[in-house]
Image 1: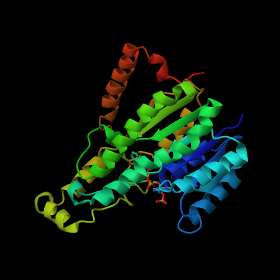
Image 2 (image 1 turned 90 degrees about the vertical axis):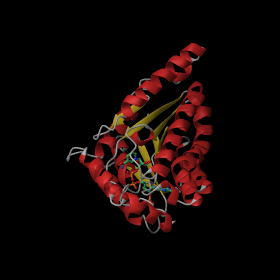
Image 3 (image 1 turned 30 degrees about the vertical axis):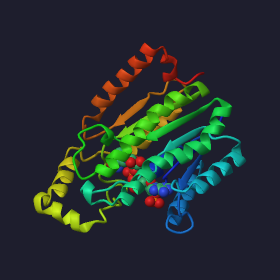
Image 4 (image 1 turned 30 degrees about the horizontal axis):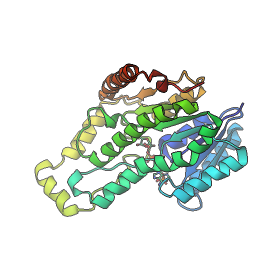
Length: 296
Ligand code: NDP
């Protein structure tokens, strides 16, 4: 049976690649994008051209993850057209660069909104349908930044990705009895090939940011350059999309809880593996090991 798939933040980067990787056979991919009529109109056209050329079912759908009514309208449209959503890929996100103190509280709230609350909006729209059908797959595009080497100057974003990861872990156990499976994809940093770094937000409080410059001048650029240099030159962000497609293609119950794609090897995998082992052991100790896997 064909799968009905929703990818958020699919106007660029990993999301655009994931939408294309997942579009094959009879599967139907809805590529969630905001501003489909203006700023992202070209992305809509590009995807339509790709779908036509490759004879696959991929289409853009207006979906602003910061707006519950936009999320609800997109999910209702998909349910209206197909009666179900089988897979959701939580991909939309936004990063920041600069000293944490120089970001206003409102800016921090915005970063948290785009990376964390966004997933709650989408989940509250799709999970009732998945729970009723006792089936579904949540794929979370997490980040090695939630656990790895975590250099400075990306604090608001790192904190948000860590919060997103914590939500994903808790929700996985809470929906598994409904037959819903969860997987977290953990990319390392890809400084090129997506808009992640190019579109990063910067502190609004420039006075404070300048005071940091006095002691840390050029360290941000230096750290970012050194971080980028850890990745092999041929590090391909398309690998994230291929891994997502491979994951979705696996039979239910056999999907790994985490998938790692980190060319820079910042150490996150090691920490996640320990954390996940401890969580599994703890669930066993409590007698709730079955929550670690979706009910058949
Ligand atoms: P991009 O900036 O290319 O992609 C981010 C996407 O999110 C864009 O399509 C953007 O849309 C979308 N988005 C942001 N806010 C909203 C919103 N309110 N509603 C709908 N869409 C929105 O970067 P990446 O592809 O690199 O990032 C994708 C995901 O991968 C993020 O979750 C990020 O945290 C994660 N990640 C990235 C890494 C990297 O190094 N590149 C490493 C680890 C994780 P728009 O064009 O309209 O702004």
